[in-house]
Structure formats: C-alpha cells, structure tokens
Length: 311
Image 1: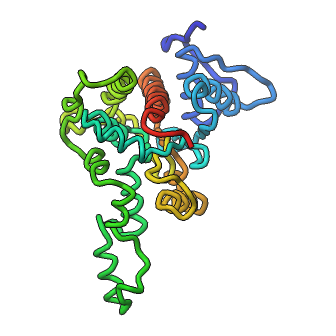
Image 2: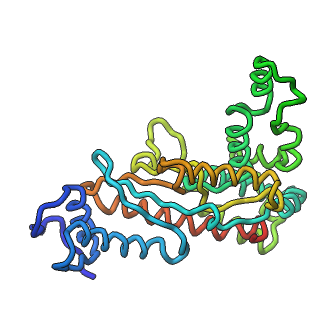
Image 3: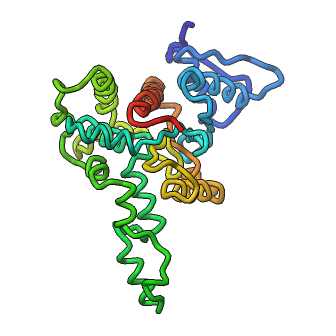
C-alpha cells in the first residue's frame, strides 16, 4: 500500500480534535488506509483505522488483548489490558527447581530477564512485591506490620499476617535472588552443558534481554522517552509458584489484584502496559515502539512454556 508523504498537502472535510486529526495523518503517512464514510465522523473513521492498525501489530498472538485510546493533555494514551483470568498462566515451581538443580545458570538468567521486561510478567520477584504491598506495608517482611499492631494493643499471636518464613517455602530465596540480580547473569550461563531445548530457550532470552530497559543517566531509556509504563494489576503472563489452588499463596495474591482491578477506576490497575504517543511527532518512532511491544509479548509467550506447565 503506498504511503502518504509528509510533504503532500492534506485536509479533512470537518473539524475535529487536533490529536485525532494528527493521528489520522500519521496513519496515512505509513500507508494505513482511512475508509471514508458519510455515516461516520472523522473521529470514528480514525478510530476504525487505528483498530485495524493495532490488530495488524498485536492481533496475531493475543486474542484477548484489549486496546483503548484516551486523550491526555498533549498526547493520546493507548491502554493495553489483559484481564488476569485471560493471561497465559503456568505452574512453574517444579520445573524451575529442576532447572536450578542443573546449576548451568540458565534458569537464573531467564528469571532475571523476565523480571526486567518492560512489559510485566508475574515472576517470583513480582509475586513477592505483591505480598510486600498487601501484607507487609511495603516492607520486606512482617516486622513493621507486627510492630504497628503491637502499638495498637493487639498481641502478635492474634495478628493474621503472612510470615516471611512461610512465604519462602513457596517462593525459594534463590528465585528472588535471580530476579533482583544486578550483575550480568548471561555470562554465567554454561552454554556447553545445555541440551537442545535449553539452547532454544537461551536463544529466546537473548532476543528479549536487549529489549529490557537499561538505566544510563546520559542515555534516556527509549521506553521512558515514549511513555511506556507498566500496569499494576495485570500481567502478560503469570508464573505460579504453587499449584494455583484456592487458598494457596498465589491464588490469594491474584485474587487481591483481581479485586483491586474490579474496584479501581485507575487505568494503571487495569492495564498490562500503557503508552503515551504524540501523534504529530515522527510516526515511525512510535510505530517502531509498538512493534517492539508486540515482539516483547511474543517472546514472553514463547519463553514461559519452557519454565512451567500451562494451567
């Protein structure tokens, strides 16, 4: 499909919000066809074209991914949501432990890469983050919460709170160490000892790893530059560290996130990720970022089956 050169004069037949008009022009510049219709407004025509464009980028691998457009102050906010019940979910604890026992460094590299992904996966580190938020007032164990209860006159034996010692029976400390590691775990992978399946996993991880944000003060993170932010209560994939049965630790935390999403009107609680785009800027920049996001999602969903059994 031929694209519209930015230099070609263009005009709409009716007035509309400038952001919508610029989005429509940007789509035409990259060859997206806007279907003219007397029964639709310019905004409806641009919205229809945007939906088709997004479906071309994301629709091939995530049928349940929902995309909404909302207007920000100077930008259009694209919200990508995936309800928890629709997120690909894997029971991972046994497979992770078996991989860890091989001591070839691959599973640690996998956990660290997924934990740092710009699009959230519920890794052991993310699960611990939810526990700290829900149970421990943001601390890394129950101590602060128990002290507050004691100050309120409630004896420790009457306080219903998760103990970290119990949590670590479900989420092994080594999985947290791998997620949080700041060192280069790729260099610790013993490639010569890997079998064919492990080499395939390593290849996928090596594709995802360069797409994770790098904090260099003199070099702004490209995802921050274009406004890519993670949601709080949704994930592109879920790694269960137990069997996911009702009453279990993972079920309790996922239920909390589900309730939070149902009760909250905040977009961040109902999004896997969000993206602010400025339509009048170089359209190819934010199209490239959207394609990056699609690639990241695809890699995540190809990596997770190596680490667990689909629920």
